[in-house]
Image 1 (cartoon, helix red, strand yellow):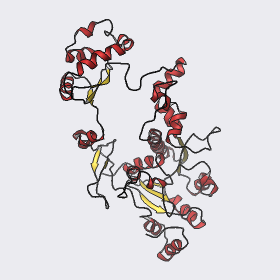
Image 2 (tube, rainbow, N blue to C red; image 1 turned 180 degrees about the vertical axis):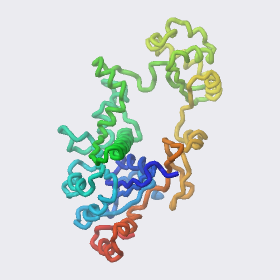
Image 3 (cartoon, rainbow, N blue to C red; image 1 turned 90 degrees about the vertical axis):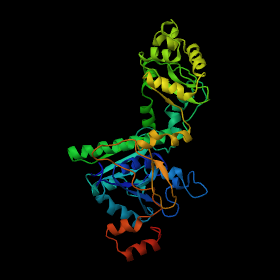
Image 4 (tube, helix red, strand yellow; image 1 turned 135 degrees about the vertical axis):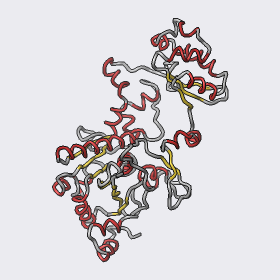
Length: 398
């Protein structure tokens, strides 16, 4: 069966993390992604987190399954290649600072007339309007402006704390893919192309959902200990072997089950823990009670008992634990992938699985300019034309 986005072609100008993550999600679902890079160093993300053996987990994690073409966009010949590509693609995606492609005369206003059904997606830092719209951004700038750094740190007055793996970039990329797929559906239904605006800031505002909405409704943002949960039945605990695990007794029906597993039936009717409000108000005391009990047996014993009682729970892993957990491999969340340079390559799989039109991880990230000649030949350039582009520095010979 075909993949859901098979036949969709995407011209991808994005760099670093948020844009490439979004276009990679589309590539996983079958879209053909043509990654445009400058000759020489290409996407700056290629050099981020590069190991001594040349492997960049940062770049590989964001660009698998794409085709790479090098083009010097500051030359008329390079821009002409873009103009020839635009009528042949469905989507253009970019995350430059606003105005960069416009100044090169290959922005939305120039591209749209070449392809009336074109979807042109912009993944910016702060959105299309307002005084911040023209400014550049990276991940923690959006985390900070959205309130996420303070919320993650514990609330007003706390030391800002970031999520290590680029939360705003990752969520911004997911939002980009969502926007592009929605626009593709709209084009299928109504026959129109359009511009899609997505931003890191907007994605982070949306992500915080009920926490931010609580403040908008009450005008209050509570302080909390980022290392603990105020709901002792919805928290994490350390077992006697030093390993951690979670319990998620959010629904009140789970509280009696947790108490019976701990052999602390007295807590079921104790006024300090009998209902969700009491457990919340007496969170520190109750967490101490649970911590003392859970410290008496190893993690696997507790998990087995909690699972038997049908209490949502699970282990807390570091990355060694994540990579060793069979559940992740059995569902394709982690996979083996052939790599021309790194034998035994393991990578991140897909989190969305369709039964009839599945996507898939098709190839590792491309080498810089790996598909330049292929793409130019597909556009009708002949080998003398391509050699001339190489000689002028418009593309880089491989």
